[in-house]
Image (cartoon, rainbow, N blue to C red; front, side, top):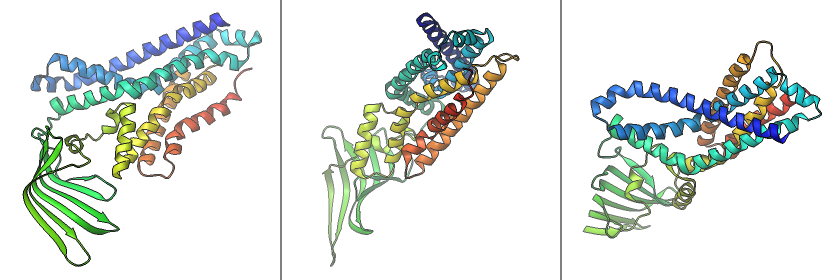
Length: 357
């Protein structure tokens, strides 16, 4: 059986690689065709286009993994069933669980590779895709979006009307401390600028109000250096910032946001849960794929492959829905994120009762 194990693992990985490359190339060609006029109009360098396509290809690989794994395992298993190889293997006394071993080993290798890519490689590729689109396709402004609100502490809130990335300068800055719905203090300035030499913020034309039970303390000044738990990068975070961080960086960002008491920390927590959950999808979908295509079909493997596409898309749709519910603020985000894997694992166990013995 060891020789057969090696053959199945080799064929599985080879088919998976072929399907991945084929689907990615098709999508990249369509994407290039759609954006070619924009590339020419904006005079985008060829090297930047190739780098973008490489980064986008890595992103697609992660997105299409459920589809590619399912198609690969169904293609290999249905081909073996069509040649009556599975019947011969089971007739020789080998159990179906033993037959599953090489498939699950190959799926585990794919899952482990996916974990490494998701944790350390894909975040940089995602950041590269976002940077390319902002630079050449969307033509981002030199300033961030107006009216930025950031929670910088458990009871502290910062506001800035406009922040300019090129000079690290913002206008109409306020820092408020609010406890139990009551304003404790308010620091305002016409201009705030990041001092790169001291790594501090410099406030120009500042005003400070400290409210007390009776009256208030009010002070002003021309210039003030202050330390805040934010940096210029915090004013220019992309919408998918949590997807551009490597796994260690993601954990550090979660700790930082928890110390600030930030409201958007749930996005980063869910992203970390997803990165640990995703690799298991390869094993679960492989288990279901082998069960579905283990029987010989007179019509060939076309129906199984079509069903593989359908179930893979159902998995992706269920994953997107469960992640949306988790980000919406459910009390059990881990359970919500793991729902697709749990549902498909249960489906696989039910289907297991129907396999040939």
